Length: 173
Image (cartoon, rainbow, N blue to C red; front, side):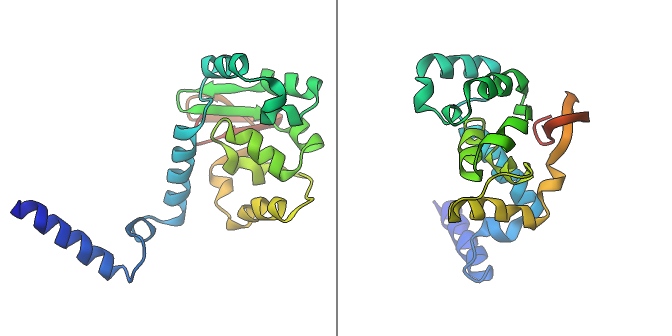
């Protein structure tokens, strides 16, 4: 019991020293926070593998999914472009998303795979609402370049290779 009391005291003191900030906000650099937020998103995503994609598609009517925002031919191309690694979605073709979706629609689509933070990496997304603007604001942080590689694909573990129209998600490759 005494050890537990000491631990609580240490945690309270650490939080007080942080000036009221969350301990996680002070313990990690912006890049480290970005990596952790991406890891959390992938962990909570409904689709992290080809098998999970197949189960998801079988269990949900297409019209009720974010995939419905894409036209049928674009959706087919997008789904065929998906490459999964051991850590989730590693590569996808962004061109149909770029042509057909708003930033919000793209965000919702990519959230199925836990890679919604890649949305600002897609050039030329339509902006129709304030939410679209907010989603694309993250691009200005300068942290996306470290994680998303435009016009690259995941070729092998931790190796992105040039490929027009694709995005390699470095954290998952």
